[in-house]
Length: 305
Image (tube, rainbow, N blue to C red; front, side):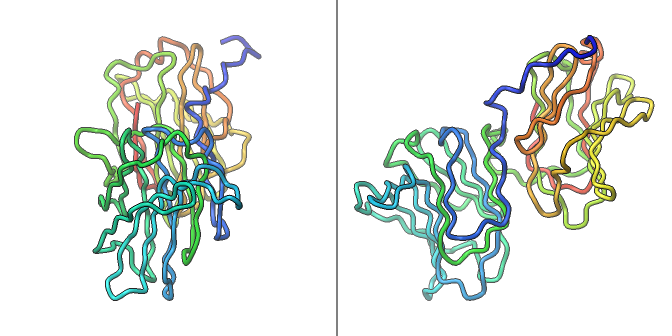
């Protein structure tokens, strides 16, 4: 790669809508690109001790009057003798037939992680890693472009994932990968290939590394995040450090997504939807890579290449 030459920008389809941290409820936001099969929305937060109910609405617009259609209304209720979830659709100002799910997996005073996975015909919902319910669409998914969160809920983070990496055999919801994690690259890497690493930073993080290793177990390139000095850097095979001039976007107990896009002459990095530049690497070295290794103070939800 010649000096000053720039790699092509990362395609929009690989960019993650930036996550939102600690929004004030009620909270309404646009879903970039709308909803489509394979998209996932992750909601992390806490149910207050005195919570009565809250709702997460996937809306067709954000107008106040007339009220927009709601393709999927997710409404946990805690104030009854038997806490439960109501799901429904609002169309033309009228609620449709409601569906009720008992045995609510959410608890007052407890934290939670809810995943909304949108398929071709239905949305599936998991709570804290366990499948909870599925709801068949009554309105076209393509009409949904807005997320609304209302009621008794403390939201810590909202994450938007553009590609569904969780269809691996029969496992639709990830239980988490053990760290350190090793992922084989039997054919090496080629231009256009993307490595995706998604997860959650632990409570008291120290470091996080993503390294690419060749057949001799050497690591020609390593991405390292250091929480002590809040720096992000490329580390060469010989231990040389090249700092990445960008805001440090890793935070304790928050989601992250690392994208590595391989192109002719090197690879580009995006973190939480923000492009953070590129590093040079020749094609021969890319083809000789055989292993992706991840370590550090994180809980992994997805490793995909």
